[in-house]
Image: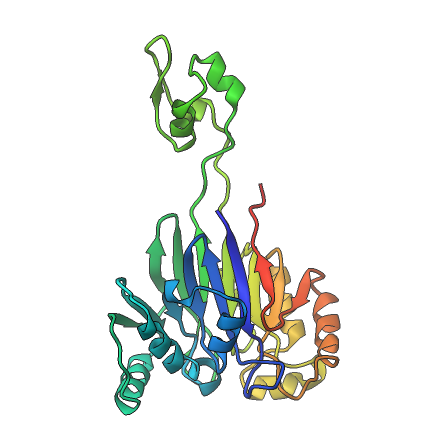
Length: 308
């Protein structure tokens, strides 16, 4: 099952000609999940030729303009096609007010159901077949949340030689064993899956954190992530300014990544003060702490693979 993240925008505060505002799309097989919707989100969706009408849920970190100004356009865009399933929008207090006010003032034509869920505490906010999404509070100038999408454990590796030795012939019964079902052998005895499967294997985990001070509990929430997308707004030299504005530096993001034993860190939400060339300084400072760090760039694709 494919799992991949698309960086739709990597900028913070204001859009630049080559840097849209923060938004990340996660595709799990055919289902799409949007994390934040900064200005120009639609542009990257179009350039990447992503099937935006399949977006199931939009997760909003907080209601600062650079994270939600793309949302009205997404809502109107979704009315241009037939949509049978509801669109879920999950975010902090007042996200429902923002959506309703936008619909009323812009006189939006909406031909599908919008379900809004406001969150105030850490909890599982959404789940589907084989995965769940959890939110957790961050520390910013207004209520703000990070998110993790974590898959359930998978069955262990299938051993064909053991199945044959137990009298289960090659064919559809093997698929049932791999799915965790007990099946009959040729002699009529029952073969439970644990006799032919290895130990359960971990699913994958994606984490999204932006606009927050750095603090220990973030590492607990994102622990073991295969991909950790985290703001790295400033360089070390501006750490005091970051603290005052309740943001974090790239180096602080890297420390969280190291503490949480994530597999890859993608920095995002850069201050507009940095040119693309100057962003290399943020990368150097982060990579010195956590080597497997990349600078997220608009329309970058980051596949999330199984470890085994």
